[in-house]
Length: 423
Image (cartoon, rainbow, N blue to C red):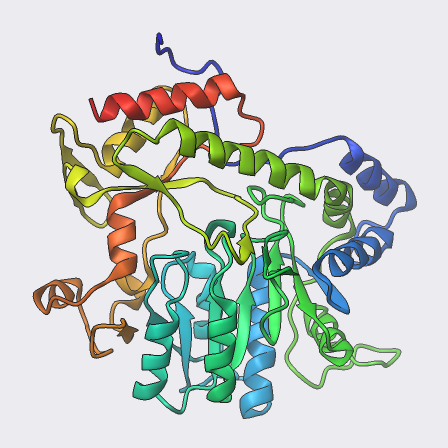
């Protein structure tokens, strides 16, 4: 196969539009409902709630906004309403997924809490229930757990739910990447006490922005709607008795979501086909795809990822912003593969760098199933021989071009480029 750069850039994951979105955006324009109320908001909330199987969904400006309000609501339920100058989690520890985007855990800091990171397990690349149980042994007073479903793959929710119930802990479920994925026949986003999804521009369903808070509790939904519109009281003037936020979704963004929703299953089928094509194409290489529990879950396959076998890794060194590698025959590494596909005008990216490795959170506690929960540096972890699953996946893994507008021929070329990296 002759390899030439793609004429148009091949993206990791870009919005896939269908035309219906314009109709609902135009409706918002023509009816002049351009702000944070309107039919598009009402209909998109209804459609999402019906798909997820929850009683209510609250449309917000982003998945991060939904996470912030979910974590704030959980903190208030656990510890009471805070003073205006303090968050609901002031001085409290919260168990958090370690390998995720920082939006999952930043709201804990917004509310004054301290994130305690729980290592990843190899079966699904999500929070390790064994490490979570150990974390409760070390910090028995913790009452809140924030989990995420990485790259659209559900975590081991039955085990995590059981552990949290036994310790009287609430769960905030970040399903930002997993909208449409299911675990044992139920949609992700409803396994926690509070759940959220995202409609960011690269998600499987997009609004260009936006997110939703998911709940079976109507009172919680009313509370989130109030908080997201600056906590205005029911008075003819502007009356405020508690802290509020400007977090409501606009009717224009909701028009995009409304137009996208009928295509969710189509997008998932396209993403799954991409995953399976990579899996087949790589069968003779020393790599494997991001795993999932085939017996109990059906991911949405938002991003296809691969991980290189340990003995097939060439030497790779990463600093805070740069990476270097040393090419070796028959071996490769994420840095080499990402740099190579970039030369052909295609986009990939590294796996999420675990939170305990991020400069902003390096001093936070980090719990593994084999360590003591008080490791303070990556050097210490290696020195003590502690198994750090998330760091290992970050070292050897990468996200592949997963755009559902990618043609089979284009994907075959990506597969061939990666094969040649191992030549």
